[in-house]
Length: 233
Ligand code: OAD
Figure 1 (cartoon, protein in one colour):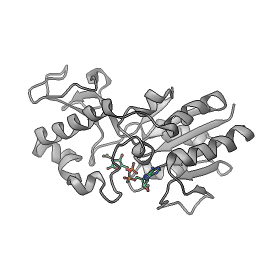
Figure 2 (cartoon, helix red, strand yellow; figure 1 turned 90 degrees about the horizontal axis):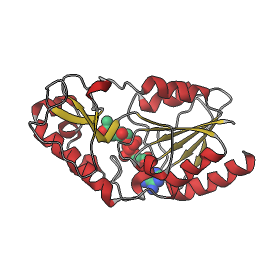
Figure 3 (tube, helix red, strand yellow; figure 1 turned 180 degrees about the horizontal axis):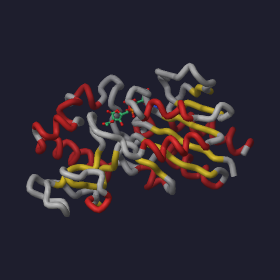
Figure 4 (cartoon, helix red, strand yellow; figure 1 turned 180 degrees about the vertical axis):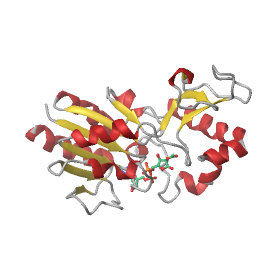
């Protein structure tokens, strides 16, 4: 089976009703990113940050995977697939994808403030489960969202780079390719890899490799690509 890697961002979940970050009306227009999504912001006001992610977690039970998530999962019948996502939602899991690398963490997990990347500190949270000030991780420090904030290392970047470097086909969906190191992952693609990008407003498209641009929303663009990939597959 050929290897197919998806690199997904907020745009794939937009049609499920989850607001993107940098589009007009996006989350970073409503909340100062450095206050709610940086390690400095967390130390300044942990309650504000914990509540911001409590809200995002509660939203999960009100949204459903869309056809783009579902088609990504269905392609596992034809390809050896890996999804590398910057999203912290669980819509790829709920659509049925099996191999998912979350670069920026997961809303349905919590970890320790002192040792956030120690796997023994990570616990699962239900979609309706809030983290509260005073909740403790196994090591006794404050429980925090399992989210990679600005100013923190991105531990999953290495397995993600490895997956991209082995891919025959890379499909980028709904990311503004603004945030590094995720935005640099295409640099690991093989020279002969076939690269597609689905985004209604493609931007920051790398110039160092040929990219087939499908300037459509995720659901429509994935439908088109699904047909192409299953005919060729
Ligand atoms: P952005 O909000 O930066 O970009 C969203 C992209 O989705 C844009 O290129 C839009 O054109 C596109 N888009 C919008 N609607 C779409 C649709 N229906 N179908 C397909 N594409 C659509 O989101 P990301 O690139 O995911 O990190 O942002 C990367 C990271 O920045 C996030 O993981 C988050 C944020 O700060 C952290 O919080 C650490």
